[in-house]
Image (cartoon, rainbow, N blue to C red):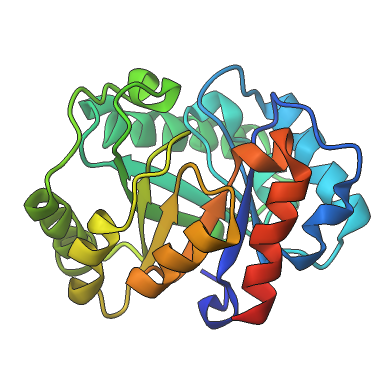
Length: 245
């Protein structure tokens, strides 16, 4: 994974289905962009969102976060720096294993069609990164799509963090509350057990104070999504915190 996490504390998550704010310059102080969503996202609108960001900020690194294989193609992979593939610990089988089989089967078919052209599977594989994922807001669309029926306890969060780093060797562990602010308890549970794995928190952050709380609790970076689309002024406050860290 060719990302320097030492320089990343603020991440913007862009849902390709939602409208961009009128002034995309609010992205000036974010460190990384994730493009993805759980409902209505397609390869086409994913590419549109990625290209719009790149037009204004060509040096800003972008991660695609697909929920289904239909959102991923050789073209989407070629346009981003990393494809973060979620493995959702408290989701159904499809969202921990099954979707991965679908995605790699599709990519294998794509490469078979491209035989004889200048396409290298190693280039694609180098961009694919597994992300240990926990969805804690069971009322969210992300939870419904992923088969998440129950949130995890602090002990289970700790276990998922340990499994992410020690057993699976995933480079990223992501705690997501998807639309609501979940506080710092989960981050405090996971952070002491992660040495090499990057710890992300996303969900309901709409102020510098909330972002600061999460970072001080041990997260390596905060992921800010909804207020990018819905409240650019609040979003700008969270990015200013990042630049001051």
